[in-house]
Length: 415
Image: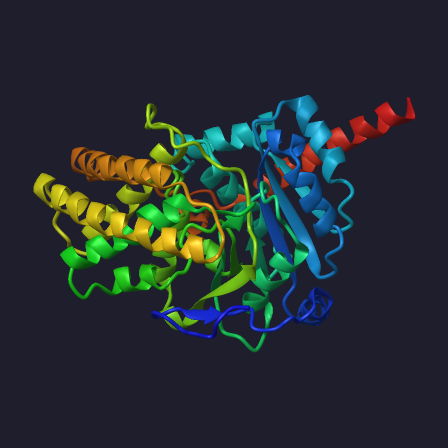
């Protein structure tokens, strides 16, 4: 049972009752007559082999209000793409799988790259960007949700609550961010959010006084949640980060483009667990180490755009302030865990804080070394201006893949 307290400048929609999933879905089905709804699922092929994704697909198959599902498939060869078509074929809703590693989409990507319009890095940001482009090309939905494919505790109620704020015609929200407690198997999780993002924002607020953007970020209960929902018009001008700063970057874009009264966050789950990243102390190019550097850079870059001046001394001050605040948070979370009978490994918590503190300096140095870095993928509006028929060609490439390999699967079955 959540509380009804409103903190910060973002509206928080709580889970205050035991309203049934079926009741919410019935209302969403009625909304769908005015605002057709879609879902984007960015997936690695390897996730088809996990425990999480088969269950997610089984749950989504029961959802009555979706008009379209767009699945972005990364790291798949031809045989794996054909397997993915079979895997997702149990979905009764209209759906398409974008084979991002297929020759048709790679050729389109190469053309965009030649014009400086393609994502520079492989990963979730690139996958999501192409899924959004295909969704815009189809023009079938007015509201869209996005969530990851590694959620072990998935329930279709999560999707219903996530998309409700942008699907209800009586609401004026353009964007909604999901939040939840990161508790699973008796353990308090969510280290990057608890021990990096919130303490770093609080440290930056001591340096940059009365900054509305930091107050805005501090209003989100789980800024790193990978669950969003949007009104479809948002996607035209949205610039998506291609690195681990995706979630923070999307929040920055929404702050840039919309008034805070058009944005909200919603409680979507009592329990949430997904694939956990390693700390990766020895390799800053993967795991939580890379994630922490990219997130810190994203924050520094946004503040610099707004006029904050950074130098090496500033980053040393931020690190020292962050470190003290983060250690205090460890004590806070330890006590919170104890009263709730949860486990919390203090040694691992302090190891994480030490790594994050080091990476704040590394992120600052990388920012100083390349202050003109542009990690954002261009908006689809910009791409259309450069290549007016891009949507038609993107849609046809996806449809051609689908036709070719669905026919191949059918022939194989008949043989």
